[in-house]
Length: 386
Image 1 (cartoon, rainbow, N blue to C red):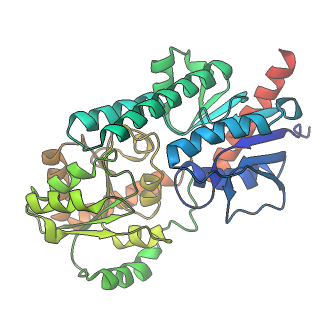
Image 2: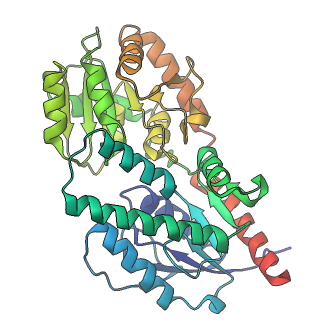
């Protein structure tokens, strides 16, 4: 029996190869469009095959990110006619007319993180703090509204994010469904090591035999880069840290100097081929305990790197403690001990990377698409009955 062809509205600000949820939707949208009538409501879309996708581009106000996201919520709500679609999928609360949600983060958790950072002394102007407080309250309310609208039709990208929704909104387990993100194994692969490692290391001035830990991504305060930098100052082995991504370098450079590790920390701005920088490294460090998924953790494992990661997101499925990596708390002493353990035993680090690679083989974009498609067909049937 041929599955029903759905009319799907997929709602997200931007779609493309950068970022987190932007890249997830860039992978999922063309795959869902193979069997369904897919309409994409967004500000921008790039580097995505659109031959089977109807794109509804909304006017981009070019505001700061928080204000831009709130504008999008209003604009998408006015642009979408829910009766024209079987399913309207939001990414959290980014529209007011959704009947299904694919959640990539938890806004109550993110608000808690920002408050904690403020208490720990992260400097912000009074105006900035006031705006962030208002923005976070609105995002939390939009998320709560989306949960109420989508009871039973909530999808999350990890088990830890499902636990967040069960805990924060007192939902029964069968109302939240996990559809794990995928990875492109043709892009993120072990074979890159032979070609990319010597080339990237030469460009960065790193010796072939140096042990390199890589930290990759943005939002450095939230991702606990400070703890990683402090950990480097406590290591006994002569390892180095390469930070790949955009962020405010000055406070972290000062922190590295304070920790006595400034010469061992190298900052690299956003790169177009992150896979080359993963292949260059000897391990990935991702100690953020509130990480909803962590695409870079999965991509590092697919490249054959051992993982030093918090017990959350993709790491829950990729890390067997002491076998494919190590679980850590965001504590410099603990992180330093695990870095030293890998750096002094490269054979063990290689074996752990092999184990991480094997676990990464269970993740694919096609697999996630099939899971989401099955759920959407079920959601549409339930809506018809209702």
